[in-house]
Length: 112
Image (cartoon, rainbow, N blue to C red):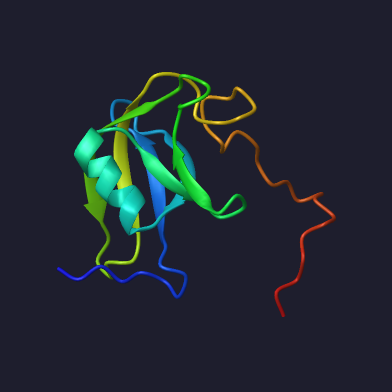
């Protein structure tokens, strides 16, 4: 199967707790990050802001041991099922998705 990388050589990677099914985070991988993830069994990503490889948990200790890597039907998005060693979010929350977007949100840009 051929992976369909975007124009920057990246793929979105959804990270899910393998036990609970909770979506923990969304990050991006390049080919090197994916290869390191497969070789080490721990999640590696590409930081778009820092423009460097990022081993999840290298500084915090909150590594993500990867059980399975899935690819979607279009071969352009990955799903990592992991055993997290701690919170996924830099805020200390278990998941980066801990807030809801309410109807009262006033700063939502109109994509038109």
